[in-house]
Image (tube, rainbow, N blue to C red):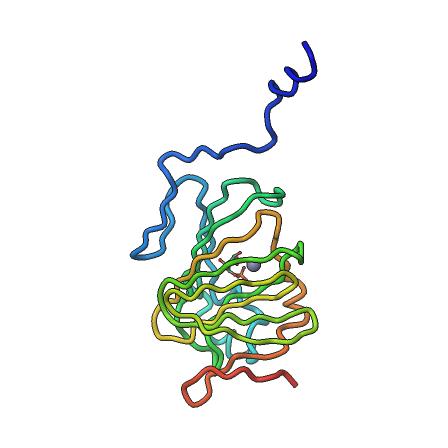
Length: 202
Ligand code: M6P
Ligand code: ZN
């Protein structure tokens, strides 16, 4: 057997992922169905240290759902070269003058970027670069957001209905929550006179 045949007989490390029936994004809701789709629910108890007023957060219903994420994993986590797809459903609400928001993260492989596409609702994508410069991009149905590498990202629901957005990111990006929980973002998005305002941290 020559080396060429050997190569052809090797099982490829990766290959087409057979998903049957196909994964669907239900366009009327954003819900994902199909094989290899997993859900995570974040409740108020999971949001320790996220808000300015931690005492107020602790006084709220700890079982209240803040957001839910469904993710389609066509390849295993950390595999280089693959992609993941997800839908996030972020509830409306306030903790004091801060909107319900995602925990936020850098990517564990910091160079990795990500796309967000808003399906329903109104929100803000908060972005902080590694020099701790924070900005936000308003989100509404159809807005497409590119999160560059080396950029922390968090989403706030600034509206009064569920904010639903789709995301696509590299399968080896990973989530670095630790840096954000230690340093926080350099500015907080607060509801002031009814509108979202980014306020620099002292
Ligand atoms: C998007 C993606 C996911 C992320 C989710 C919630 O769907 O960026 O990778 O998990 O938002 O954000 P977080 O992980 O910061 O709670
Ligand atoms: Zn991300």
